[in-house]
Length: 354
Image (cartoon, rainbow, N blue to C red):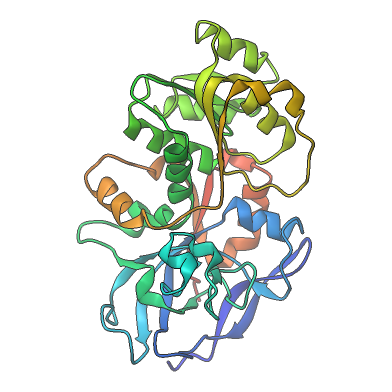
C-alpha cells in the first residue's frame, strides 16, 4: 500500500481524544487482512473507554463497529479476495482454542485475539484502515443488494440485543420488559419480536428515547421511572404477576434491581449491561423468586443468521441511524453521542475526506 499514514481517532487517556496521523497497518501474519474502513459507528462501550470507566492502555485507536473493503490479504487467506465488502465481528478470535469452540470468543487465548480497540494489542476501526488477524473467522461478505448500513450493527449491538433476547427465554405470548432504550436495548426489542412476545414494555428515564421506541414500533408501552413506579406499573399490566422476562441493558445497580423486582416468580432476567461498579443485591428479598438469571458478553456466532434475517426483511435497524458524518468530524460526534444531543441514537462515521 502506497499510503504510509492515515487518520485515526486516538484515545490518550481519560477524557482525551484526538484525530491523529498514525501509521497505516500492514500484514503481519498469513491469516491477516487489511481492511479499508468504509463505515463505522460510535458505541456506548467506546464512551466507557473515553471516560476512563473501562481500563484501556493509551494510546489506542478505538472503535469496534465497522464494515469495510478488503485491500490486502495474507498468504493463508483463501475465502476473502481484494475488493470484497465485508461486515465484521467486534471480536477477533482464533477459532481453534477451547473458548472459541464453545462459542465464548471473547475469551479466546490466541495471541492476536481481542475486541477491537479495547484491551489487547488490536487497534480499532475509527480509522481509515484496520488490520484483521484471523480475518476469515469473523468477516462476512455483504450479500449482493445489501449495503453497509444494512449490516453495520451485526458485529456488536445487534448480536448483543439478540443474545439478550435469546437468553431471556421468551415464549410466544409473553410480556417482556426491556430496561434501557439505547441502541442495545432497541436491538433487544427488535430481535425479541422474533420470539413472539405479546407485549414489549420499554423502560427509560429519557422520554424522547421512549417515544422513539414507540414510534419505531419496537415497543408497545413506554414507562418512565421519573413519572411512574415501574415495578407497580408492570404488575398492573400483568395481572399482578410481573413480567415473564426482563432484559436489562443499562448495567447499573438501580436498573438491575428494578429488573429483579419487575419479573414474575419463576421468570428470567437477562442482562447485557456493561457494569463498571460493584453493588450489593439484597438477596434476602429475592432468593425465593426462583428466577433464572443470565448475563454475559455478546457471542458472535449468530452473525450469519442475523444477516439472513435482515436480508429477508425480518430485522431492520436503520432507525438507529440518526447521524452520519466523515471521520473528520468524529470528535464532535463523540460530544453529540455521549451527551445525547440532537436526539442522537447512533453516530455513523464515513471515510475521511481529504
